[in-house]
Length: 267
View 1 (tube, helix red, strand yellow):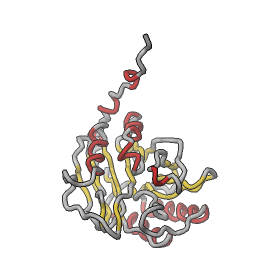
View 2 (cartoon, one colour):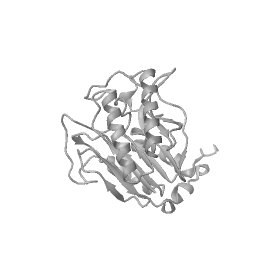
View 3 (cartoon, helix red, strand yellow):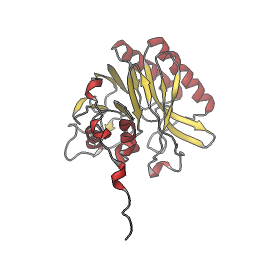
């Protein structure tokens, strides 16, 4: 099946973000993708960084989800939307999954927050799988997939063929501009992507904002750990790639044996 990863610029407003989302959904569908994933907290934007994030409340959340559901149905493509999730507990980071009929399947929250995010967000507490057109997949959000590999292993060990990884690294204002994917002297992010695919024998689909100074590319990693495709650094775009579900065996994830890591018996 074909999957798509949409890498737009930072949204200047909720309406601007929605326009970018509609355009990306349309392009993904026109190029034959069955599902398209957006970056971490794309609506309204990830807080605490060097760009302005517009206000986003329950009313804005409902309006955004209604629009995305309508476009998913119109174009016949499923959507994994990186967004804020407003709850009674507080503001969370989440990925909302909408199927091609426009129905919301549910949301995966970010449960492992980066320490810098703790003043701005509250963590979620659940993890789940999703299914679209025969593809069973999970979602691990940014810091989780980069530094907590067990979040990806959880999905792979339960039958996920792919884990989507909405993330946010880089800046429009300053920073390095990589020229080589996975460069030895570059940031560790792309090496971590390779590990998540290889150590679980699944696909790992990692999607970033189109920052002018990206620290990691929007990329599709195969079950062997190889980078199969990526977008050029700093450029907006929709990456569409064919994946072979049979190649994602989950072999290494299925061999995980937690019972072998128990505490030694005293004495």
